Amino acid sequence: MGAAKHDVFQAIADPTRREVLRLLANKELAISEITSHFPISRTAIAKHLQILSEANLVTGKKVGREKIYHLQPEPLTEVKQWLSYYEQFWNNKLSILKHVVESPDENGLN
Image (cartoon, rainbow, N blue to C red; front, side):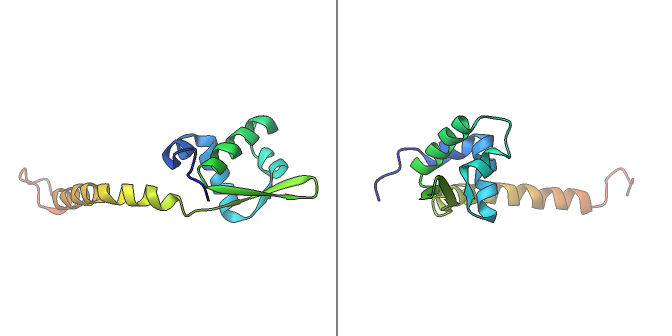
């Protein structure tokens, strides 16, 4: 398998591509089925699928006259690892918020 031509982060930056991935998470779909979910042309969807393919997030196989696509979630691990580093900041902020919300107010309002 060659190196990805598109960065996973670039591939998922587009809301249409994120929605395509969400659709493919449920089941394999033909390009015509994917296109039916969007107000854009089949050609535009084909371009999005090409970018997702180049990022190794989807693969397509010819079945008769259609091309059937399925999700390859493995490259998303890179995104998960990147985000997990930042969870420490969210968790810290959430624990501070919990402390503030649950502590008696100095003004005696609680």
